[in-house]
Image 1 (cartoon, rainbow, N blue to C red):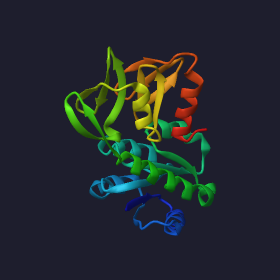
Image 2: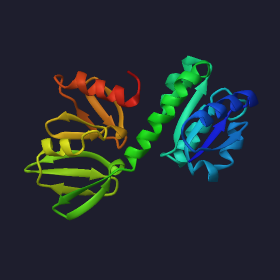
Image 3: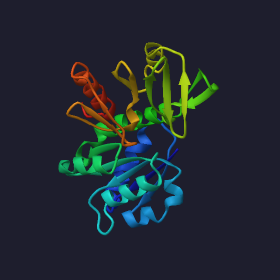
Image 4: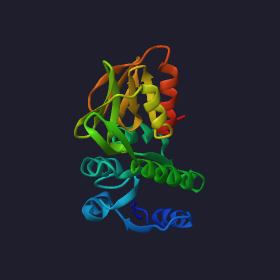
Length: 231
């Protein structure tokens, strides 16, 4: 598995490399001394499972580099590393997977790596359903949400829709443990596609807005915060 480490401090790059080598995974690690140098090597970045980025760098800083990388490689996991906690909100804006403080890396890095690799394994999961359109194998990561429509449930996926005569309760059980949240009797949402939840409204990355009932709102918000690693 390939990993990129970008930091303008040789000492900090070395410390991060040592911590990664101590993890129980077989990583190929490549170092970069600037955001510009990293972005110039997108051929390698596209093959990475994780990119570790220092935020405070001269020229193209970590936030700018993260934004450019995510625009071209949305599935690459970005971990922002900094000495300053006040950058956390900016990390969310560039869709970083995690935000780590340099002073805490020895404690937080192993768990961060474990969590991201678990997410990657889940993204690669495949499920099979007997749709009206026929038997189809779907990558869990490509299933955006399921919505009840009349007597059927409709799967909205990346690319097309499928219909199935199966109860939502059964579908929820089929997808249990795969990071889906039931926000309504008629909606089952893949949390990977949630942009934000606010004022009883969920907004997906596709732009779709779905009302969340007040009775379900606290639990839905809690599950989403756990998924994002912020609770």
